[in-house]
Length: 336
Image 1 (cartoon, rainbow, N blue to C red):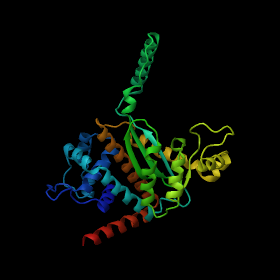
Image 2 (image 1 turned 60 degrees about the vertical axis):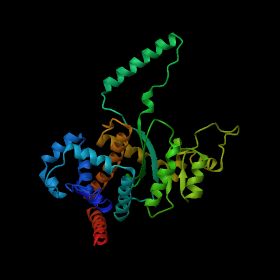
Image 3 (image 1 turned 180 degrees about the horizontal axis):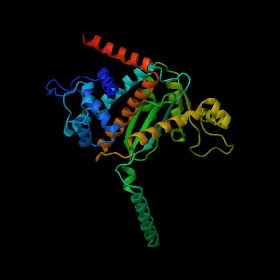
Image 4 (image 1 turned 30 degrees about the vertical axis):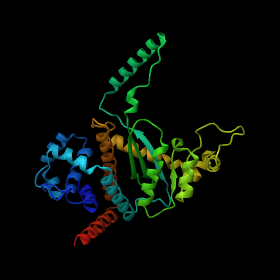
């Protein structure tokens, strides 16, 4: 909770408006939202938890716990794209000061994952699958074509850019629908590229991002080294892929030894980060609308970063304390 509060103090204003009631500051509310996500609570559950944790509230300067309506409204304000970008900017600064990025030796890995739009049991999912199979069989017997379920088009999707050295999330994209991965490649890479001092790192992604245009964007426009297996599309008659950089990928990633030597095997780190978020914070979202689910996924990514700093703080407490101290000192100097 203290780590989340310090993170928000460095990059967020104290109040959202000069006409605010000033009962709670934005950093305090952000810290409460991180605790809610970390403990897998609803807004009412987070209110009850905070009312019983007076020491937690005193650590961030709160005299009383905010109610569930305040937390819900705060999530709509704090988890906007612009404010999440500011928080990720500060995460990258802390990562540089604490030496957690390591992009000079290990690559930036990107991937996407699908979250569950509601809480359901495995038994319920299995029975729904069996029902769908029976309905398809009946439609096939009648000569009817079964259309794709509308549920696929409403699935919440999260794409992240992860520093493979520490599993720290540097860029986030949220959307709806199980579509292709290549449309959000530019945003993920550019957001991570502008946040770190090292502007010549490697990018590792799976075959969902395979495209000659993507290689040109990364290698020619941004000066990065992209590693993406060229498995999408049909090869030519001689077995070669079309495009200069896709042919290069075919040579670099042709064998296990070459994949390991080039650093492509680090791609599993982004899958590990997605697994960490789903295991630690849950794979189902409580939001009922598309925008609410996007906010929930952004909060999961920010909570994951706070947990990384907290965990690394127990191992590298001196460097992390120095990073937080320097950030807060710069904030106070700017205010004064």
